[in-house]
Image (cartoon, rainbow, N blue to C red; front, side, top):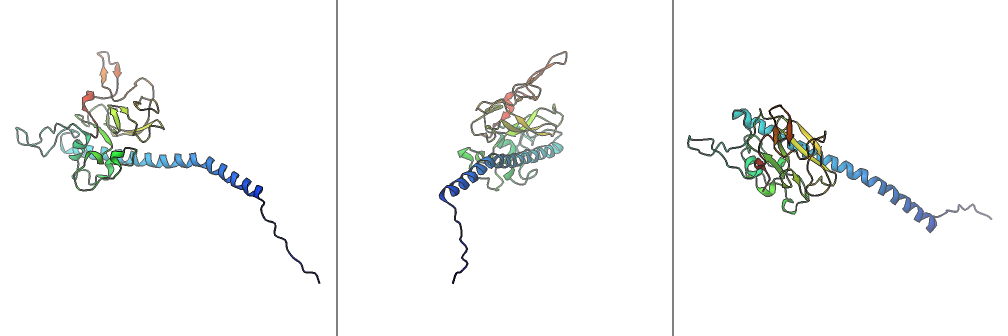
Amino acid sequence: MKTNERKVKAFTLIELLVVIAILGILASAAMPAMNKAMENAKISKDTSNVRQILLGCRSFAADWDGAYPSFDPDAENDEGGGGDGGFTTSTEAFNVLIPDYIDTEAIFWFKTPDPDRIQPPRDDGDLEDEENVYAYVSNQSDTTYSRSPLVADGLMDGPGEYGEYHPWLGSKKAVVGYCGGNVNVERLSSAAAGATVKTKDGLVDNIFEKREVSEDGEASGGLLSVDQDYVLLPD
């Protein structure tokens, strides 16, 4: 008596290798898109941080005759208060915003390749250098030239010269907040350390250089309304 037996055909080794190869090709094709999406999400977080810091600076200015943080309101001067903080780092300047104008230290940090800044801030009311990744330009106000940089990604080797730990260096991007309140993702001049932010029209090579205006109204130099000495880095 014969019985009906169904024969199950198994994959051969060659067929299995072909399937694995196809899956590998598909995965390798998807990785760049996935990495790009992840980076864009992180840049969005960076942009949000800069926007919140700008809002804190503008709230401070509303209480101090339009001046963005360039002095410590709690310091004593010869007249009895509001003394010049003599800030030498952006961290010192940002500390005057905590907690009255910004209630968390978390917005001054995001994950970067810098080995000295691998831990997020402790919300203890005292922002420290290793908890801050942003630069700040002091001695400006809400009536300053609106395109003058105020807050920016701060992992620089010098004013406007982005260093090897800048997280968006390979993508030639940088996030900059301006005195007028705008926050933009700007284009860097190169993907190597020392890259600068150029204006979109190509007329300015480094926006973190002082802007000069001639008697006939022609502008040259960068976009800063103050000297480069006022560009403060995290440490």
